[in-house]
Length: 363
Picture 1 (cartoon, rainbow, N blue to C red):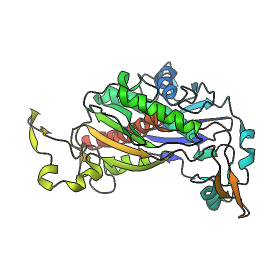
Picture 2: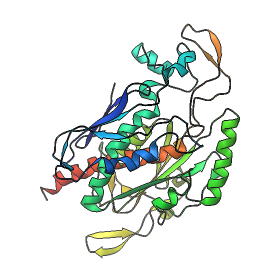
Picture 3: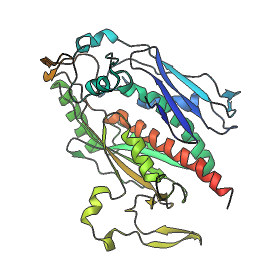
């Protein structure tokens, strides 16, 4: 089972949804970076369950413990191990799913691959696995900000058919966090809230889109062929639970434009060797390499697969059965997906930044 991500900034996550705990090991973080639990906890607080009535009501504080890799509040270059203990696990709530495959979930495919599965909340397929990613990315966030001032910010730009109107260049973390939907458009956020609450009452779920920007990314990150920055962003973000689609820059919308309209004209920048662009349909990446413009991505998340309405499925013996899932589930994953998208973006950027620093030594 592949649980490691990255080349130089490497992250291995561990743990299951209803086991003793979840966490990660980060290898490759440079030494002498100031780091304590206080740097990690804010991002975990944004990801944790139970933070509003719009998400699963599992009651977890998700308090992180740094077990290794730091000394007196500073990284020392060795692997950084972090643990979050599961305090509100209820594996018994999934007894009725022991021999039943949930529709559009990982139950059947996991058992088809491994011949066994942890049916208690989905095991490794649970979104609880992303705690390790978010914790590791909090380190990457601090590293990127320290080295070159990179800022990564995501928000909910749509839920079901409800579209938000957001200024990508000006939106702030405070605006994103002002509403439980994590949509910085107040009017759209109110409509999203109503729709999500209705879906919960109906025993149903909703999907949507998370938009993410990475600001102040220097030009030169990524390589032209198999190490393309946009390809790594796509691979990392699509690895998130419930992620089903990825766009960068104009994305699929660019297919209805002409080349003349779509090209990003270069303009003189503040420094002779650092031009800027008049538009950003490339989404900050050209030829697999960052060009200095803001990186803009959009990720589509499907409606939550586990719902309380009766659904047709089969059991392990192939018998047709009806399943009405019990337990605590998100009627819409979008609000909690925001820090997850940020996390994978940060991990990819940190990995590429360290790779570029190695290249810069030879310039």
